Image (cartoon, rainbow, N blue to C red; front, side):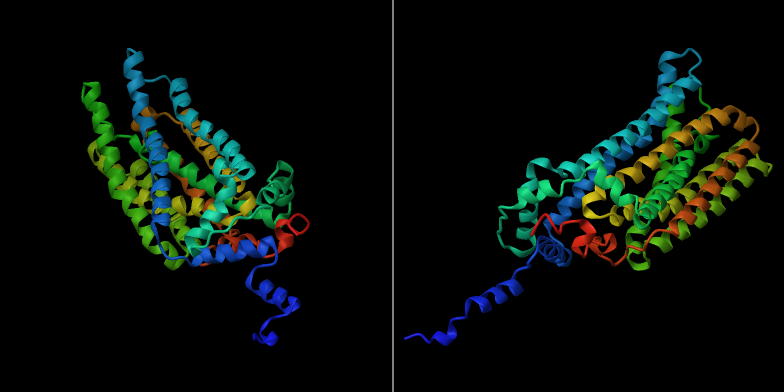
Length: 392
């Protein structure tokens, strides 16, 4: 006959159940996130990297190809084989302007309706299954999703608090000044193309030579910088690498402008210096400010507002791209820079100051290295995310 002493009372059973299972939705989510953070590398992570990588691949393709499309349009529609200034401005700013609008709209919609709307109810169960092997389904999840759906009023209420708004402003303007220099200097912009274009007679040879020179800068500067960031960012932290990249870029911009603008040299030697300095600057921009600014922006904001906050910072960056293209095309002229290289120094000086301003705004960003996304966002309490009254 079984001994009744081995049968726990209902009170004891409830206490044991409370210890084994989180009591609130917030605790359940924190436990799930902890499992997710501590999970070993698997095909799930590899697949996420591949998907994100192809996204950046297509984005980079559109980003770099416009400078090669612009002269082709000129050869196709103009007798003088040159795109008019207005047409060049339109071609260059249309991409960043469209990205800016799309980021704001779809960033908010991602928080409002979910990253994959058709799998919204299943997403948490999938993650739980991946990290623990347990299959669970919460019948109240649909009610919870509706109760905690992100609205514009909620976004405004969150970021109007200075402790959150300051982070948003710092991340946005750090990205702004990074893109101001990125789009104002890199190999797909007129400045980096000064004296790089071939002087051959045929359009094919001119476009081919420009592509060749741009490829040299990308392969020699962009890729080594990205690889260096990959191996150092988790060791040294986000902010130290960003500071270093900003400082080196500012110094190199001044050196670049001084050499190209004031040093007496032939056009051939100036072209060689241009390629060399462009490659070095691209390395230090990629090894620091460029990747880290959007990486930090993806780690700063609470889960409910992460896509919206990221979209705002990214849109501010694309606004800098529009300003950079407009500023260069309206204030400077490539042909005049060829004839009067001192103008290169003035534009380089503007970009150097942009790097210093970016460094200043980075100071106000929290260090995200080694911290979970929920810890950075301050979502360890129910009051922080406003779930008290909706999920009990």
